[in-house]
Image (cartoon, rainbow, N blue to C red; front, side, top):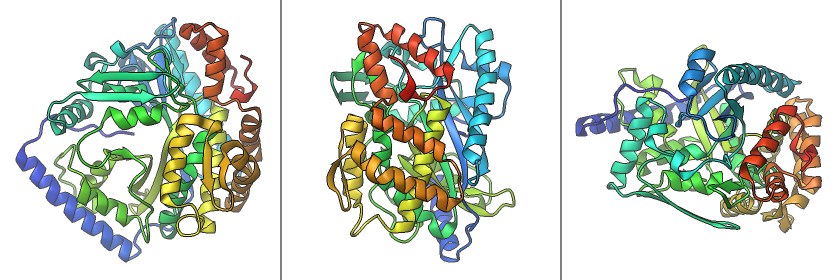
Length: 466
């Protein structure tokens, strides 16, 4: 959940102070890594789900403030736009039937949110990009009224020298758009998985998350349309990367490589390569690492290492897996989580990354191929050479994910059965949307009516009728 800040403007003195504190806290983090001070307790999981608010015509509805005030729930918070909110799941230990319990908890929270939305003549929908969103909807008038968003918008444009942001995506159609604000980012809604790992395994899980991203995304696309254009299977990926593009190293990216020995390498790269975007002044002691954590929070790697703190105050390490879209249903998202968690475990424990395994360049190529082509992507994998994504998943990676979950003590085979059936039927959220739109003669609103009806059923997407 994002943290609000007190100001929207920064002085040169603010930036100098922030730079000093960031350097101090990064040095402290290195000391904690070297002295093995991070928690070895691990395999805790949390979820964030970004959702859309739509009106009775399935167009975006800018009422998140009313919805949040009426609902008044600590696990439901604002997002960048007034037509998005974020649902959160309290962290849980990854064992036994934990994913089923998380599914049930999120389903109950979703029902409460929708009850309030209905009172406001609206509905919530989980989808990677909303087919009915218009370019004209993405304006500052629809930005949630929070300082952190105003400041983010101001600083992105400052770093761009006032130049507008350009989005150019070539898919089945071609999209070109220009904005003088960051609101294009609001068109991307995701399902984010936080995995707290034992400190000695954190860099292995980070590397495994990067390596697994391509094959996982191939099976999970749910964002084929934007502004009436048919683009990538997961259009969120190029859209987000371009929506906040600034000079210097990309802030939305796969990163520059695997972590060799520990995750401090990533935090030191943050210090070395990225200008502070929100140089907020905190009075907390360096041990709280407020400046390091805020700086890391505005570098949006698709797999992002995080430093947090247990209830006891002990520092811990997490990997935030950010590649997945919102939706289509909760059971689909839990299946996606099972695939990620099982496969990350299997790869982390097998040494499949780096020399003799999945190279970083290969992992990066796999990721963008999967984002564009989904199950039609050709991926590179050790021992397989170049292979179709569906065959790689069915023959190797779903079995590996099953083994990984067993290794973690998770008894959730049914969720991976859903992934297997989805790949066998070749019906992801994205492919269903394409077929459903064609069946409705290109009617985007008819598509959304059908999508929302099937989402309410709770059935996994591979079972949806066109």
